[in-house]
Length: 310
Image 1 (cartoon, rainbow, N blue to C red):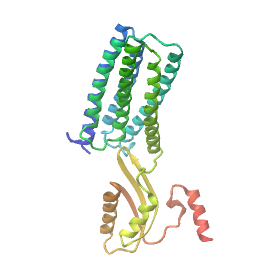
Image 2 (image 1 turned 90 degrees about the vertical axis):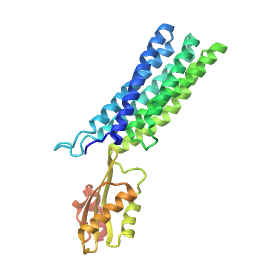
Image 3 (image 1 turned 120 degrees about the horizontal axis):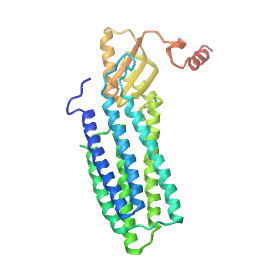
Image 4 (image 1 turned 45 degrees about the vertical axis):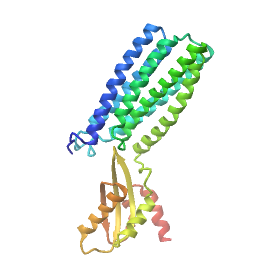
């Protein structure tokens, strides 16, 4: 499949590249600002930005690799790399949260001297950079793939971090109360933790070949029987995602049709338009399948057939 200039993959790649450049440039600027002002908080945030740059780079490479055509060894191509990258990004976010909490605890008991004015200037600049990156990654509001959403989570983490840094800088400038810095860090990390955990579960679910969350397999089976008159029974259904593509295999017991190809086309059309399943391998059967090798899980199926005979 070729990638046209306006295709989602190409669009995602451009967005990630721009966000990567913006994040990396600001990370360098923040590190220099932290060094010049002697602010450990800014240097630590620069380290956070470095992790985000790495995450965006991983996401960008995953999108680029996913364009590679399938071959004999990788029959689905490299689409799954985007899910792997999302999983790595989510895991990295969790590690960042642990680091933030650990650092916040130590700073709460031993407050560091923070120069409020440089901190405020750099935090505001960071806020603007993050807003720009978020705007780029959101694009025209279309549904993003899991990989771009993973990258967005990193940028949102930075955005919240910048807001927290601005509030902390203002409090430090007006009252001189240093513990506000670690307190706001904990609040921000809790928001990041919730999103990261959700993404980690979603990407892990895909890596385990789990069915898309919005599809009820039992309802799908019943819907096929109700809406296509020749269909009598649907079984051995397997549904999973490879990248953003939904892939399905299923056995369909039918009344012998007048036109086999027409029935096959109608089933495929129904799956595509009602469940967005664009790649379905359908085994048409005229007799009910009771062989244990019909299913991947032979032991479970054999037990089911044994109970059926009793």
